Image (cartoon, rainbow over all chains, first blue to last red; front, side):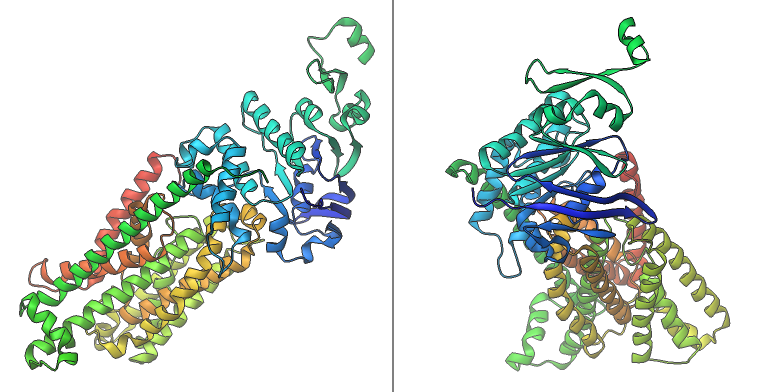
Length: 274
Length: 352
């Protein structure tokens, strides 16, 4: 794959109306790695992703794409470098899978450059990568949740960008589909050298799949690094306000968080927690 | 990128071809039906003419084969009327499908959110209060459509426009414009009322080519603009965030599309009055015909023209001796369609 694109932010402040969500945050996304952003509800992880994806205009600070301020770049040029899958995309009634995925070709087209063979190839590649080729002629509203999510990822893939940002791509999916989607994203990173950033809810899947994990608390980065470096009981306590044991995931040997609540806990641990 | 095998591309191309074929089929069907409707409209009436005679009249300016009486009926009376139906219906159809697609709501057509009612209100005011006539009235109808559109857009703005709020405020504005019209009628002289009535239900009566020129010009200019903007609409339909992610300038595109839609509705209303519900029914009918086959822009225009010419035919020839304005028939048809649409939306659990 060609030279990797650099995405970073400096002193980024983001918010909606009169609420500031993310304050003076600086971050550098490692290229050709799978970065996962985690944190409690309302910690600003989705807001940060929307800011990095230039969907939200910063109050202060700058997002840089290859050293240029992303909000000053033509949005269509950005769209050829950076793809985004927002949390709640809308599928028009009755649209077919192939048509929806084809919409990902929008930034490559213009008034004079209409649909060409390269577009068909990009759509076919995206469908194949997400294992949805046999759904090409089906209506999106007839698909299962897992299939639909894979089709949306295919739409973002058809954009053929080196950077891909996804906001909770596994929410509402059954566990098998969650693993499927994360395997797919890992393929993109490790086989095709893409840079992927995803906000994830499930801490253990985040630890397993992330090359680089960013833990957020109150609109700030609490810690970042590889999961084994970063994920400790203390971090979980400070980010989620919850006691936990961190053990080795028997499958992947990555950190695995075992929550400690008030019930169903061995007496010894309970005493230690108190 | 991995190398591309032949088979997967073939699958994608096959799906695209299938949709293109369906689109072509729908367009052909609509074109044939429209031609048939125009043929009927030219042949049937108090002086029925055989189709061969209609064709001879249509060609007479080129062939020189003139027959004054028949030519007057075909070229002077019936053709302008059919063209008025085609152009105004087409403009309403385009305007409606643009509104409905941009706002992602089938209720958001210009005749429901009050754009055409705003045009009626100012036209009626121009006649009754200012005693204007002719072009001045048509112009004031255009101004009224644009002003009420600005009011609706402005009132529904709160960090951007949400379609739902815009529809509700539009329905409210429509009611206010309707109240203004009712009030004006109570103060009007009887002679003015006759003229103003045409602005309540659209009518193709007294259509003439000179009269239709501004509408034809508006269509000629705005249809290509709509076609260009339709590309960004394909992205806008996926939600604002996705559209932005794909490189669309969302607010700008949306505003552009709404301006085009308002101008089309204004031009059509200025030409033939607020023919009820044509804008509202055209898009959904076209979409139902197309299924997943995409771009409903031109099919909606054809449906609009067809509905208007067809309704005018019914109003003139099929409802007894009294010739009704076309708006009465489209209004009745549209109302039934509205009930159907609401019931269908309710059943499938999708509001409005």
